[in-house]
Length: 483
Image (tube, rainbow, N blue to C red; front, side, top):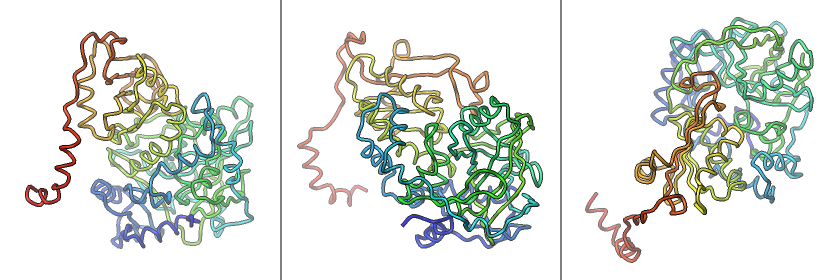
């Protein structure tokens, strides 16, 4: 059965011995980060801090910090199940992955998972029209952070043209009890809604922020869905059950009815404040920049809320498994559009957007370069800085094999593609200009004569199958001796 709220997921984690209740008094200022950082890097449990110093509201960290917990969160044995189900529903061959996702969004069976509006929900148990953000144990994660940051917000806005709701995840620096930053990067849908409102001559955009939602909803807010595809519908699809939504008190928006905490307010279109620095998932502090200001007018929450947060920093961190879930969920859709693609790896250590390693069934000269440009033209993968293409005999998740292929099948004078001044992720600090920099493509496939390779390509050293089978038959006995 799908989780109705964050609490049901916490209960499941406890049943599976995947939750540690921390009864020590621990400060949300730096101390929780140090504990969570050690635990996540050692593959440890989810952490429920029951006694945050100075607060009576417990804090949940590292809820998704292992592959097993991420699969428990989405209730799957394999992440690919979700994408495969979408492909089966689509049963079509669109001309691009964007068309494919839009077509999937229009499927009747998927539309049946549109959210269900209800009269009220647990998030309305306390309604505070004199909000004070400082009563929540919001974390300051790293020593040089500019302050406290809300790190797991589901930020909800409405497209002024279509009327559709969008849910995204953008960090929020707390400036005081009623205002935060709104870190809308230019490639995000929240920033697009902001831009559209400005073009319409409006002076503000209404915003709601849900903190502490069910796992499928939180994941969907991070998923690279195309414009116009509802994150709340996608959450219902993952859950197998429609999400309950309730109207806000002061803004014309709906929020998950069973959220722990909801912030309601607006962003003025002409108000900016310096936001940051912030210790980010790149492993570096993102420097201060001007970003819009979110003004909170009302807070609603459960009677005894749980504050849900995450820590980002030098990888691997908890967000690794949110990213890996996206990689595997969207692989079947990517392969539906580009059937030559066998597998893809977006390494955690590269921050996902910096490197994509792709294996293909090579069918014609220049095929690897075609795949590079396909990746650079596909949704949020368009921000990928480096694309490495290998043959299908290489396991893209085994870096030993990838390095072997790159060093033995790649000639830097012939097999490299460099594109200057292309869109990059806003958090790429290596680029000389914000959001704009070079891209690198490496063709590490075996080259053909038609590609100008005039030598005979040598065979890979492999044992014959009959010898493998013979040794397999005695391997159990041998392994007890040799290991």
